[in-house]
Amino acid sequence: MREVDPRRYDLAARHAQARRVLLDPAGKAMDSAAFAALVKQCELDARDLVFVIGGADGLPSEWRSAGDRFLSLSAMTFPHELARAMLAEQIYRALATLRGHPYPR
Image 1 (cartoon, helix red, strand yellow):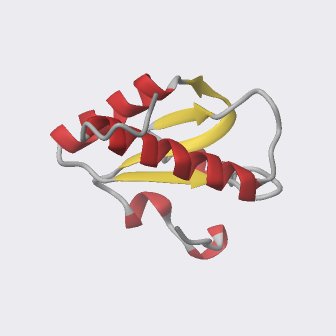
Image 2: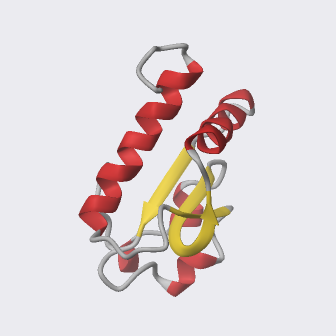
Image 3: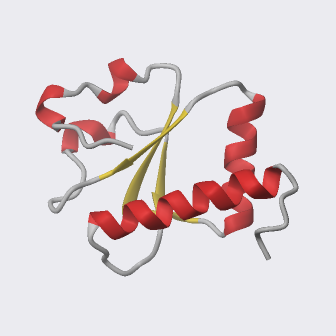
């Protein structure tokens, strides 16, 4: 995880082969099983997954065209720091599920 300055970071160029998932309130909502299926498909396709969470003002408009998928964590508004923790939990849950770990219930 890292923070980047969107004025100095070209998302599409830096991650040309990755699946770029942009978090956006208007994006598609997924349950944990569907999220795990997304992670699994990227593993099968041997593609990196890059998740992007916007700052206080949301995502830069020029990055919207670089997104492969738009994902909503909730219809509610959260601080981006909390969204980061929630996304990290879902990534961990997806990987645990795919590896047969007993963590997810």
